[in-house]
Amino acid sequence: MTDPREDPTAGSAAGDDPISSGSYEERGSVPPGEPAPAPHIPPTPPAAVPPRPDRPAEPYPPAGGYPAAPPAPEPGPAGYPAPQPGAYPPPPAGYPQPGYGQYQRQPGPQPPAGYAGPLPWWTGPEDTTFAVLAQVLGIFFSFIPPLIVLLTRGQTSGYVRHHAVEALNFQITVLLAYIVSAILIVLIIGLVMIFAVGIASVILAIIATIAASRGEPYRYPVNLRLIH
Image (cartoon, rainbow, N blue to C red; front, side, top):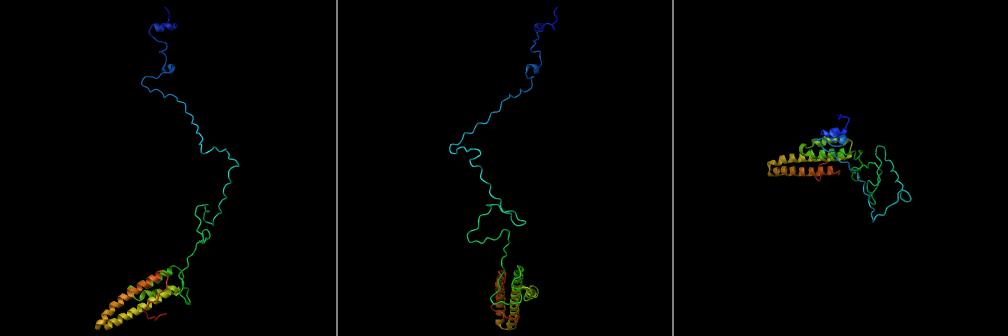
């Protein structure tokens, strides 16, 4: 009797297929229940871009070489970055061109014609604040605020002293007008004078405050200038 292990045809007679009896890896097939692997697709090479008819091809590198690089901007002052070329448009014709990074200080109010006082007319932006306070606070507290400003900031600035002296003399004038009106209140004219003095003093003080905020000197049209 022939041994089926020695006779390869014996297995086929017994119903065994020698090809199907091999493993899945040997046959190159996929076991049941598993997805089939994706087929290998070779990459498609990029299509060549046709040259544009309105733009002829340029040689590489261009004839004559590449243009020279623009010169580097000059460094700015210490602490400032160098200005970039073309970053800001040029100023119009006739406009002064200050140096880069320089601060242009605006001049303060100019003294009136004929001023020859011992104090400098303008010492800083704080002068405007003190001059406004001397004028506007007089509406509510009479001559006390102008007197305080005159004894403090008025000793160093001619502009503050001018407004403080004007406001002080005006508030003294208003106080005297109130006293006269109170005396004449026994007559009907005294009551009218009190209202007239009050309205006129507020209006004139507001006008003086606006002038002080603009850096302008101001002289009250009605004022007993007892203090200089």
